[in-house]
Amino acid sequence: MTIEAQKAENGVNVEALLGAREALTEAPEAARFKWRATSEWLNGTHSRATVDGFYGLGGEQKHRQTFTFDTDHPEIFAAEDNGATPVEMVLVGLAGCLGAGIASVAQNRNIQLRSVKATLEAGMDLQGILGIDDGVRNGFDGIKVHYEIDAEATPEEIAALVAQSQKRSAVFDIITNPTDVTVSTSKA
Amino acid sequence: MTTRAKRRLAGIVDVIVIGAGHSGLAMSYALSQRSIDHVVLERGEVANSWRTERWDSLSLLTPNWMSRLPGYRYQGGDPDGYMGVREVVDFVSGYAVATSAPVISQTTVVQVTPAGNGYRVSTERGDWHCRALVLATGAFNVPVVPRLAEGVPAGVTQLTAMDYRNPGQLDEAGVLVVGASATGLQLAQEIRHSGRPVTLAVGEHVRMPRVYRGRDVQWWMLASGVLDQRIEETDDLDRARRVPSPQLVGSPERGTLDLNSLRGQGVEIVGRLAGVRDGKAQFSGSLRNVCALADLKMNRLLALFDEWAAVNGYDSEVASAERYAATDVGAAPRLGLEFGREIKTVLWATGFRPDYTWLEAPVFDRRGNLRHDRGVVDAPGLYVLGLPYLRRRKSSFIHGAEDDVRELSVHLADYLDRTARPQLAAVAV
Image (cartoon, rainbow over all chains, first blue to last red; front, side):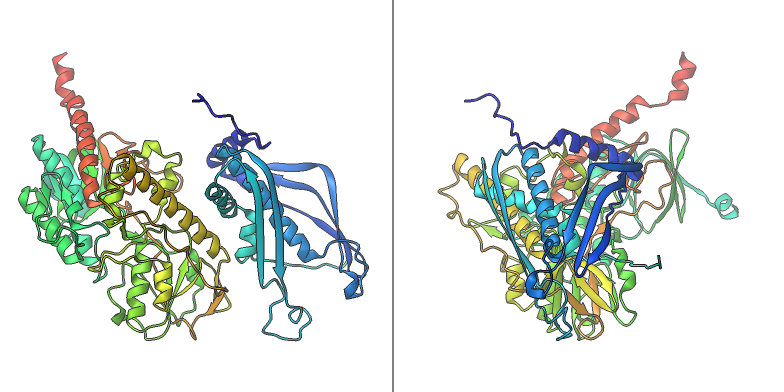
């Protein structure tokens, strides 16, 4: 019988996360974050978005570097396909968020992950955005996510990891629940 | 000012218990056993909430054989049945009589303030003074209704589980029941049986079978020690105390009440009510995940029961282990419903909270919750009873009062001893 099981190493600093949870419980103002992106239209359906700084812990914060993301439409839409479509970026965001959650929850539950692979698919009826049928929504009619996970855990424990990750995921919440959106304009 | 001046002094006692429900009466019994001078103040009659604030068909989630209080237990002929609300009133009233509890009924407490070495308890019938005070007013005083209720169109009737009595008071058209605890599921079923179309909005919930391997699930919870789990053993105290009541109903058939059975009876299952916009209810797309979470948790609980049965030699006495079908929410749960046309009534089964608005003492945290350590409130001589998971998982159940009261009455008696007659002690030195 081993005295103490090996501690899982998934590269997540759970102590820091739990420390932040405790600290932000006492300091609700510091818990208020603002996430930002800027975007510029380049040509056709091609835009480039930039992510650089955000606000949190009571002050302005910077990423280690500036990240840019090109979005465009594919050639079958008579576009140049200079990047992923914006709706694919939504899937990218969901995958990134759930993946981060799975690793964090696994670390907290001392489950060693060996591989976590997600496949995402979202259905969409173009009759919505093309205005052909008012009864069809613009967005996805559903999203299917499949996780193939190799870990030192039972299938039930793995299912529980993925379920808990959804429960605590920001992007999952953004997609599954309504969000108030304000769009304003000004002439440059 | 003048009304205060005119208010007469009603009495001076060592301890006042506010609330003559099962918790307050159990504490009264414990105090009597120690010959501690006390009264129990009750705004109405004994078991008042059960008499006046519950729906007609309500029954306990625990079988009769579990209904016990210190020095008192169920004596009827149906140990495996479940008390209806009238029987609960009789049970608790019978306890008050059997224990000769010093209940002063029809006496509403309007204000409590720290005073001298104790508390002044102002009632509509005069002021009381006490050295120690026990809050036994219950956990289910005020219905919690989410803020998005404000956006529900005016033509839609809204009521809470506290206002609801029976389907007869509802419009014949569609009813949206919000909340998937025992309350939400029981009301959804009852209203559906009355012929009305029912939609049930489901967030996080606790699923369990009524009977498992031939025994009531509460038997398993008690025998395996789940109900006796102490709050110290949980890693997240706040979350443990917020867990909704399990999806159970106490019916003569001892049938399981879950989302699958409700769907089979024609109740439409949708996600958590996430928004109200343009006259429409918007439901969360998280339904599948909250159901997956509940199924996983139920299976972990059943596995714990199975393990307990094997270790303790019960496998030959109970039926064989089984697992239940995963919750099936259908191919495409609806994400929206139109108020007015499809929904004429919204029934909020979104929980309750205690009401301490009359307690004027610095004992509340930033969110307005009572600051206490397992019932010992953060003020000298002040105690609270009967809250969910106060000291143990069973704390808010009738049978849960006994252990909590035993421990808290020891603390209270010790407090009275330690603080006895400080003025005289000072003079003696």
